Length: 239
Image 1 (tube, one colour):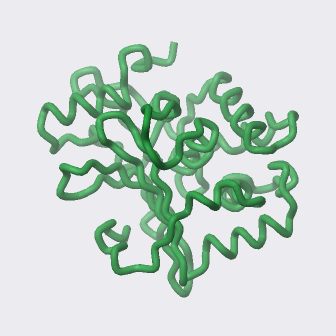
Image 2 (cartoon, one colour):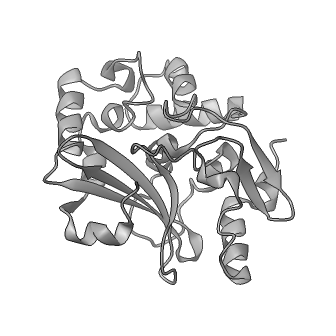
């Protein structure tokens, strides 16, 4: 079961943002998605990647990352390391909410995917004057494990290639980008459709929390705000 984010307050949570610039972070963070590709495909040393994987999975320090969005929304990425295994949880949060929305989690309940490509693409540019992860390339790669979209286009491949290169990968990164877009092995790439009435993307995956419209329980004004972030008019189709 996903650990409710409020319970993290009594856990050994540490600021993960400095890790983004440490060698080996990206092959470690994306290890589950990049099967068959060595750390060198990310432009990293195997020793650095191994050390970072140990660091991300250490039970005494659970890194947390924040991806600020417009309107006060935030996607929070929490590493959660117990004695037996480590999970990564993706929450959509807002200061006014009494509880957070779980987008994805690779714990034993396998919750995901939580984003389709049009949504992730809409989240890459940060709002002005915010703290947290603001580099578009880092935002894309940090969110990739929550993605699972069978209809991701060549434009998505190109965006992932540019993000990888921007974070130190070699120019010939298209094979790696295509592998990363296959989705997390716990849920894979799934079919999505846009529900016009609900103004929300919906996923057909058995394990996805997005089988129902995101934020269906929220007040109308907050649902409108969510739609403006995740489904702006120009991104509500794949054409």
